[in-house]
Length: 262
Image (cartoon, rainbow, N blue to C red; front, top):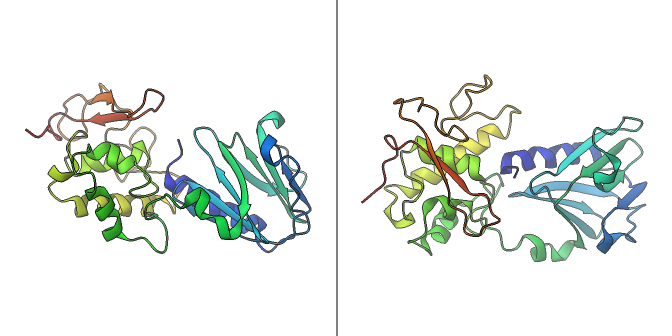
C-alpha cells in the first residue's frame, strides 16, 4: 500500500494539473457514482490527508484512496494511457489536462462540508501543515499495551505511515517491533524521527532511509529478510504481525540491533 509521501506527491500532481480549471469531463466509473456529473464546476484544490486524497470541486469533495494498486496519472490531452482502460475508475478533464485514476481502492463523492465522514477518523497528518506531535503521542498512549509496530500503522493514531516507514524507523531507533507502546524508551523521539523521514522523502521521488538512493541500498531492513544487517551483519528476520488475516503487516528487524525487551 502506498505510504503517505506517495499520496502527498499525488495530491501535488493533481493540484498542479487541475486546480483553477473548469471540469469539461467528470467520468465516475464506479457504480455508486456512475451518474454523477461535475462538469462546469471549478476545481479548487487537491490535498492529501494521510493516505487519502481530497479533490475539492465546487460544493463537492471527491475522496479517493489508492489502496494497494491505485495510481493517478495527469497529462496533456492526447497523451496515451499507460494503464489499461478497464482499470480506470475516474477521469477528470479540464481544457488543458486530463487526470485518470487507475485501480483506485476508494472513490467517494461527498458534500465539501461532510469531509469528516470519510477522513474524520484519522489522527494527525504527518505531512499536514497542522501536524500535532503531542496529539499523536496522546492517541498512541491510549493503548499502552499495543505493539508499537501496529500502533504506528493505526491511522487513527497518526496518519501517513505504512509498513516501510514503521520498519525503518524502528530499526534506526533500535526498537523491536513487538515492544509495547508503554515500553518504548522515548516515544516522542521515535515519532519525531519518523515524521522527519517522511517529510524529507515527500520532496523526492527516490525514497531512501539510509542516505543512499542507489538501487538496493535505500533501506535498512524492509524486505531484506535473511540478508545481513548493514550495521552488524546479523541476518534480518521477518514475521507477519497483522491484526487480521487479510492484512499484510510484515515486520522486519535485526535481532542484534533491535533486541526484544524482557
